[in-house]
Image (tube, rainbow, N blue to C red; front, side, top):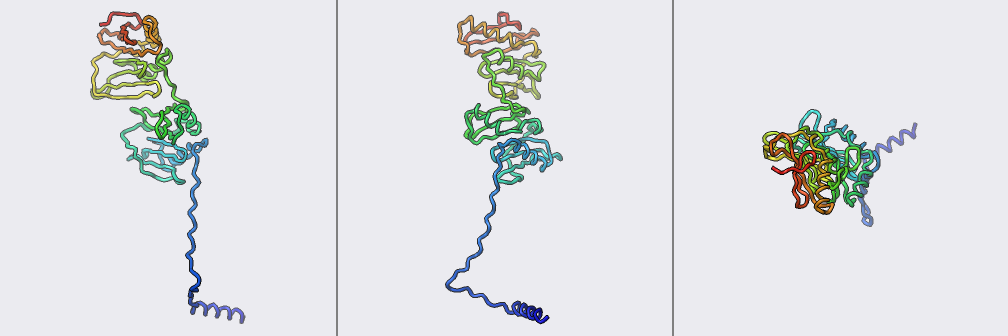
Length: 312
């Protein structure tokens, strides 16, 4: 019991009269060094499944599947979405080791929204490697999914410094490159630009710029859909009203177009890669369109069967 009392008194004395602390003049007093903030371990989003998982995690955080833009680099993922309740788009990203809402320079002007599940993002590394083989560059590769042209959403891989943009189909297969100096290229190009059309006012193929169609748009405009060799179908609207009557796209046979082009090249002794063009329209107002060819310096007009006629 005496021991307990003695200890208590000693403690009371120490509390009441703390001994003054005077640093020794021969020693300096150093402040304790702050503990270094641990650097987050960067994630490698080229690893299979990682980019897809993090993009979906960001979407869950935002609470919306109305995606306007998705972007993936080696060490970051970004999504811009429209809130389910409406309002301006918001952008979330995983960068520098953390997920956060960020400022985006994307200007929203009624771009198409899409569902991330419609695109195969299971192996971004594989997409990057494929794009590198096609473009010849691996410099700062970035994968984008965004409205590419007139409501048409595309998945691309770009580089910085800029090289060739590589387009992918939603399943991760590279967009086929079309050769308009072949029958298959002509057929595939026309198939893509007429896929959603029953009638058009003009239709054409140019061996250098690809297949295209023109049709009437809204508010006195004309819409052109074009498929070049390396770029998917683009949609461009211009302030122009065509006076040409529409015709059914299934009247035009791509095989006939190629037969005529091949015949002219053979008969004129031209090189196989000579530039050629054809425009199909009903400029005569007969109810049946004609095909107007220019192959090199040779101009020929034919009917839908490829038989040469006198141009009117």
